[in-house]
Length: 112
Image (cartoon, rainbow, N blue to C red):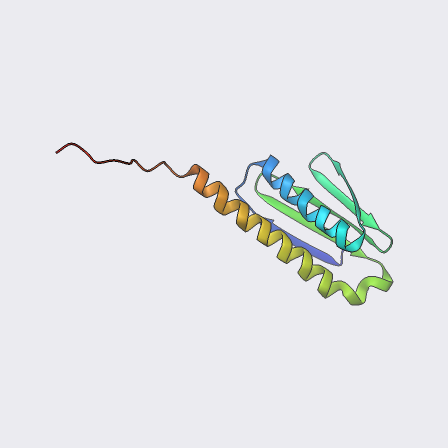
C-alpha cells in the first residue's frame, strides 16, 4: 500500500520534466540519504524504510512512496517536503519555459 501519492501536471518537454524529477531525487538523497536510478521514464528511489518512484510522462509526474513502520510518523513532513520541492521546481521551469515560448517583442519605431 502506498503511503504518499501525489500527481502534478505540467506542460514541459519530457526531458525537462525528467531533469526536475532528478533534481528532486538529488535533493532528497542529500537530506534523507536516498539512492535513485532511472528505468525508462520512471525514477526509482530507496533507502532503509523508504521505497518509491516518480513516473514522468509528457503531461504529469506521478509520485508514489511507501514508508516503513518506523518512518510512518514522519509521513507528513516527508510528504510536504517532496511536494513543496517538486512544485517549486515545476513552477520555476514553467515560467522559464513560457517566457522562452513567448513571441519576441519588436523593438524600434515604425516609420512615420
